[in-house]
Image (cartoon, rainbow, N blue to C red; front, top):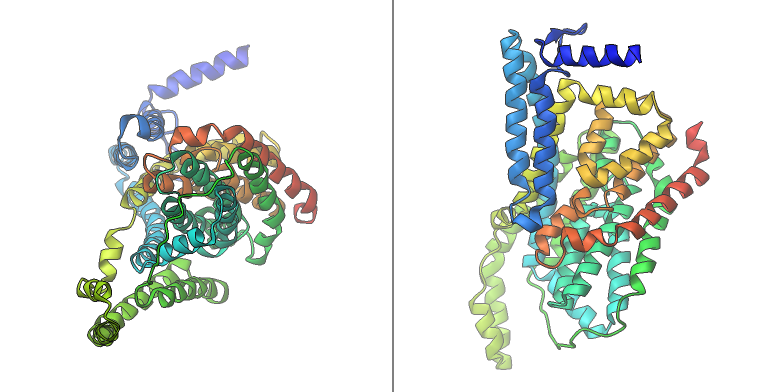
Length: 477
């Protein structure tokens, strides 16, 4: 009891005392009223994020304001202590990390928008409808594709792609679209967990040189199990009927398949540059944007000749409908595709990364690291953090762990990679894929529609963790 009273007295004194200088030259401000207010501000901002569907407030707004207030309070304390350069340098460091993330995502979103404009998704939808797949078959096809594509194209890009296809095929069937979006998010997050290029969290672990490229593949079976368990349960409640069989012929716009090839080449460029020259993957992605710009230039330059040939063919065939379509063709514009990126999502990530970066600079992440990884078993800590990622998004959770950099075996680093990835599937706000789909499928896929499946997703989460602990014991040595 005496120890508890002493601790309480120390806490009260710290709350109302000025900041002190720590041994490493940084300010010890973790127990000041101003710094504790930063935690409250971040918590309030995240409450508003979770209430987005109820209050119709874009998720980026509260975290943008929170990030600004948190760093203002930090700078105020450091300026008062005559050390403004330390807070400035810390902010710039956090901003640089976000810039790499934003540019990476921006290129991926631009390619997705370009493929959509070239009608690739319309063609995939028409093929699915033409094949006469039932809703149950579509559910499994979209989920399996999400799991298989996300290791290559990242879970965010994959979720956006498959969501676009499902929404076009189901065409207004709210219940099926909502369930399919949940399935896609779970599948994309699970598929992204076993590839360094499959999720932003795995990308960060890979960039930090904590886990080697090939070691991620040990998570394949655990990730697969974590997807199949909830997918099997959800599929039992899907009506075995077919969507409206609307016959539709879709003609892909010129260059659609070549843009898809360029996208794959972009991903390959990023991987090769990282694995061979240890350059950040964002460099390869930005090179890929250059590929797309060059190809866009080619499409514009060759457009008149292409239109002339197609008009001649349509005139010979007497196809007046095609002639009308050719008359409305506009040149491909890369920057219009950039403008259509999900900016609310990108700004949300900025706010989250900067908020967590600020809290880490204050010292709260060090306290959390000591509490979790010294007070608890690392396995328990990593499982709990995975569950926590469902609430606070898996990106800031992984960012926080990498900032703490606790001493762990490769098996534990793989475990936190797995849990942060699949744990983010428990809630719609827990991953980039879920957040993006709430914007893309607005009105169909919501926080509430995902929440009701959280218990069975949790069962899949537990199953994936157990499989990893059982199969990958060699990494824990």
